[in-house]
Length: 362
Image (cartoon, rainbow, N blue to C red; front, side):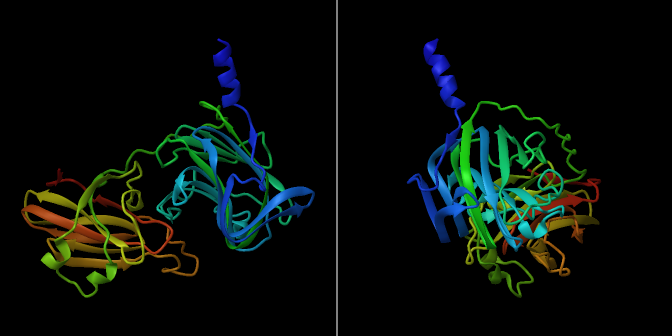
């Protein structure tokens, strides 16, 4: 019994990691430990710091932060597998008071997916104080999370679904963009099933007629499809394939199974549509950042939805902004969609106008 009690106390103990501790691995353009407004702080700019020995699956993460009113992205990483794969919550100082003042997103192989996860449950309007300290707390419990900013009595953000798998991982902080941020009093408290105080809005059901499962190819260079109006063996051979199930929203996060770099920025996502007869069906399409649609090897559509591609305010967030009319033949039809990434999220979502006379072959 004494052993169990001792273990329980240890599991819920708050641990402070001083920034002059060797526990921190720092990979940044600028970093230094100094006194700032009465606190011993780490100044970090254009980089990250992570503590390999700070392991957390569920529990509480707290820290103080201060930054100027400049364009930047600064926050905390958790459940880190390594410095390229983790969950993150960050603040956007330049969006203070706006709906996108902050952001939760998963990161896969250094690809942040904020363009796929936006709006309610992923960010919330908060007005920040600049060049002075304020407090941030995250409570992580299974597949959910809460964020408190300054007022520790009420969560400002309830994260309904943490997208990465529930696993123990490292903790870290980072500051990118033009903002150099100060961090102080970084603590973590492992807890089993910590209590969350906010009610979660039930997830909306999957939109009708959504394509729920894709076969996704190995990545390749998107420029190999330049002026390719009909697919041949040159584009289709030597690819390997994985199954990817779309999330409840219909979004398939391609980064979850695909490794991106400048030479491998594109994948094919394909399905087979069986049609009872020759007919035309409308496909509603959302993607990030570029998509080219082929049906039975023939190109039908190509479009761009990158950051600022529509106007100077367009964020490149995924949505059903595009429609394609599919001229289906009777029998088997192969729908191939090439999706290319630049930054901010590599994803695809699609739904048919209806399923009358058609079905997706498994």
